[in-house]
Length: 204
Image (cartoon, rainbow, N blue to C red):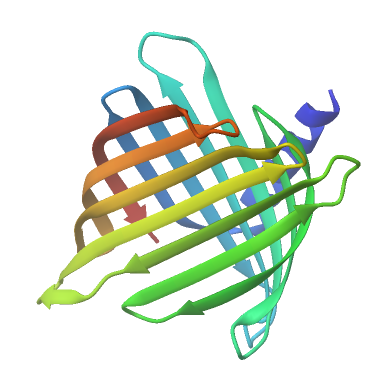
C-alpha cells in the first residue's frame, strides 16, 4: 500500500507541478514502451527544477506491465554541477535517493549524468545518464540521436543495467526513427534482453 501511495503522489507532483516536456511511444518486436516526461523551473536562473518521468513497458502476449515513476528535485549551479533528491517507485523497488548531477544543454547537445545512492536501510547505488545530439541538417530537419544509460548495484554486486538508443530525424519537435532497448540483470550480466523497434516522440 505504501508503494502505491508513493507512486500516486509522484504522479500528482508530475502532472500538477510540471509542464509536459516530451512523450514517446516505441513499438518493439517484443513489447511496447511508453515514456512521458515533465519539467518545472522554480526560479528565473533555472537553478532549481523538478523533473518527473513516468515509464511503462508491456509485452504483446503477457499481461505483466513494468512501471516506473520518478521525481527529481535538482539544484544546478552555473558550472552545470549540482545536487539531486530523487523519489522513485517501480515494479521492482522504491525509495529515496540523493546524488550529484552534471547538466548542460544547448540547441544541439544535451548531457545529464547522475550518480546516486539510496538512503533507505538497504545499500543501493546507481548511475543514470543521457546524451542527446540533434544537429541541423537542412531547413527544419534535424538529426535526432539519443543514448540513455542506467545501472544499479547493491552489496552483492550488479543488479540491472539498461541502454536505450534512438536514431532518427526531427522536424518541428516531432522525432521518429529506429529504437532499441537493451537490458542485463544479475551479477554476471548473463540475463539479457533486446527489444528493437520504431519510435515516435513529441517534444513540447
